[in-house]
Image (tube, one colour):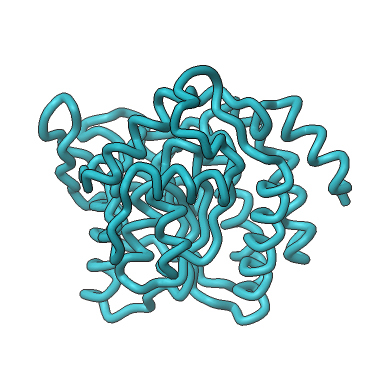
Length: 271
């Protein structure tokens, strides 16, 4: 099993934690937009409390380890690797619980170019121990508003992981799909599962709108989030998201492999 010390060293070397590529300017902009309840950064969450920019900064300092000083406005953001490790442990504990109970699970990502391999390994391990890995609404159309206007996507599954790809994209089932923050894909998947008479997931594993969209609907959710994704951490603080692992969600896909091994070992799911 990968030791905690070795994983901590990897987190820092790969810039998954410590000083990360996400800039302080990007994070502060997201915090201001979240405080203004901009749908682009709410990710499907409807906060119960009023969150001003300073409240969001304070929360992110507590959850991630970013600077709590609103006057710190430039440079790279920082994630405390100890908080990442604690998040991974909690993430693995909930995953192991799902495996022991053979819970139906839905996995989805808005970062398929980076995180598909991470989630696919989890899907394969859960399936191997008898968990139904759900794939509702495959091929279903999803219209998402983007900065380029309304775009049509199709919901697809690759190795048990939900993602969206642009309508008409070639190589369905092979290429990695499109980046999205929208909660519409998970709402579409859950609605289709309900229309079909179930089963519905008792656990959703994902990021961006997959995590917040499911958590807002009352489904137990665990996920990953960067310092410019405050919605997941607010969801955790308000009890709508069970576990959030703070890390850079856009490094090279192979840099997540040690995290995969660590989580599967901690969850007693290693093959």
